[in-house]
Each structure stands twice: as structure tokens, then as C-alpha cells.
Picture (tube, rainbow, N blue to C red):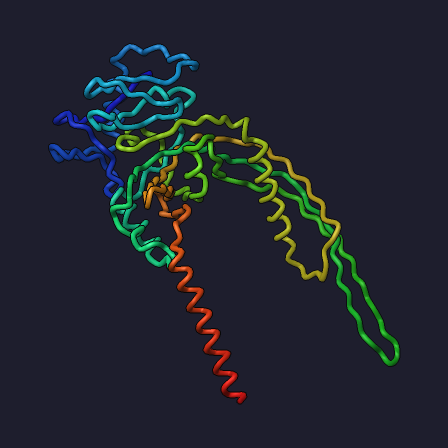
Length: 349
């Protein structure tokens, strides 16, 4: 399997993507390059090399050679970009994202590591029941960016919706009470276009942190370039679309049902006998990589994991709780209620 390191064309040092400027920067000679320039150089370099046979799917673990220092890099089958443990240079395992596994699109990281840490601290700033020491920088054990694999689906749903609406009016004339019931037959038919429905394309423990940080904005989609992976980790899909197709169709049908129901704008006192049919047609898929920051905090021997959307900053994860703070809050509420009750008793007396 091929590996590739995006080295500075001027000095040969490793380069990383700068999420703030959207360019690749060399810290050694201060040179800057665009993704297009580096991608063109990568393609030319790979064309000069003879293609290697793809490793057998049964080989485990996967072993590569660092193109900078020659050290062995051991990864599992889904890792597509990582760092060399010895020279700490970013390494892209380009062979894992070639052929049928080459992504169609990518959303590059929109903010860098420093900004991700600041956003996280802003997120926890107003959490009242956190332990004080959790807010210290020293408990941050690790923070790294990962591109996770998703299937993005565009499709058309053809369907229909029918129901029975009723309005009842009651009035009294003289000594007689009249009831009028109007029954309406409701029908809706049409086609609905759905675009960019994201579905996670990976299973396993490492997939869990990234599943709750959606949605991503479609405006950030760019044509995939391998250079964007430099300086980040990346995962390769291990779920094919056929394995999640039923789940996606189920979601689409639920969306369609809500749209049909919301189209009934007439005023009915009651609606019953609802039926709906929907068929997904002309389904198209795109394979995309989406950015997620992973944060690991270590506090009193226990680890806490958080995921942050690398485009929007949305953060998820389970925070630690300070028992003394909660006890203090409960005691404060009890004392307040006690004083209120005593005050009311004094007024009555």
C-alpha cells in the first residue's frame, strides 16, 4: 500500500494544512502552497512510480514505511492518514483512498487546533456543576483532527398522502340544538427531492464520537484532494452503501411523510384515516470525508471523550459532575424554600 508525505517543494520539510488560511504552510522555510499545487505534485510523483500490488485484505495489521525516516508504521484497516510515531511527520496512506475508496468530496477543517481548544473552553465555561480542576488546561490529554467517512445521498421520493378531515359546528336555534359535520377527503400527490443526506460509513469504537456532531453545511463541500489530509488523521469507510440503504430509505420516507402532512394547511378540527405511500427513486450516493476534532480529558484517573464538528464547532460528550457543587445547590434551594415558608408563617401569625 502506498504512503505519501506532503513535503515542502522548497526545503523538503513536512507540511500541514492551516484551517485558518486554507493553505499549506511550511514552518521551516515559511513557504505557502495551495491544495491544487500540492495535489498536482503528488499526482506527478505517483505517476513516476510503478504501482504496487494492493495488500491482501486478510493481512493484519497493515504495515507501512514512513517516507521521511523509514520507520515502520502499523495501522489497522480503516486508518487512511496518521503520524509517524518516530519522526512525528504527517503521513497519508494514499493507497487506502484510491480506486473505489477514493472520496468524491471533502469538507476541510474550518478552524485550527488552538481555536478548537478555545471553543471547547467556551462551551464548558458556564457549566455550573463541573469540577473546578476540569477547566484547567493541564487535564487536556489529547486533541487531534480526524476526517471521518460518510455516505451522502441525493434521491427523489414519489408518493402520496390521503386522510379524512372533519369539522363539527354546533348551534342552538330556539329550543333546538343543531350539529353540522363536514367531512373532507384530503389527498396529496407529488415528488420530493432530497439532497445531501449524511449517513456514517464506519462501525467500531472509534466511530462513536463522530456520530452526534451533525449536521454539516453543504456549502463547505469541495472536490476531494489528498493534500487536505496532511496533518490530520483520517478513516476509511468499512460500511458499503448497500448495508445502510434500508435505513436511509426509512429516514427519507419519514421526512416525506412530515412534508406531506405539513402541506395540509386547511383548518380541520380532526384528521383521521391517514395513509401514505412513498417510493425512493433515482438514488445517488457520494462518498465524503467530514472533519471532527476529538478531545481527550483525563481527570483523577478517569478519561472523558468529546467530539467537535470541525466545520460548525458543535460539541458533544459526557461531562464530569462535581458532587459537592450539586449538594451545595440542593442545600441552597432547601434553605431558600425554608426561609420562604418561615416568612409566610410569620405573616400568618
